[in-house]
Amino acid sequence: MKYLALGIALLGIFILILLYWCLPVKEVNGLVELGGSLDNDKLAVNGLVVGERAIGNRKLWTLDNGLELVGEYDGNLNEKNISVTGLIDESDRKKHIEVLRLRVN
Image (cartoon, rainbow, N blue to C red; front, side):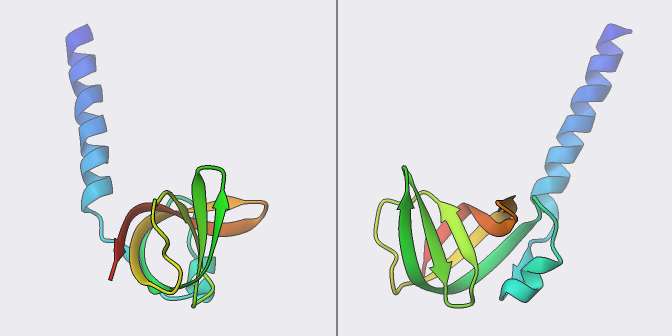
């Protein structure tokens, strides 16, 4: 009986992980579209970096469309066009995108 319960639990976890990776990513172009999204929604963003600040070992980037991204990257992204896949996060009542994948175009 224990093994059956363990098997069902592992199958459920596997299905949740599979759904998370297979569900489509929402495209966001600005702050207005971000407002209707929930925390931990997965989305894709494109834009030109107009501001960059260091916060400890992480960086905060501001895009030309007003969105703020938080993540880790060794180089300078100022004035570069980037594509990002990330999760919505909120701190101090302000939404930003936690970067999962970053690509410089």
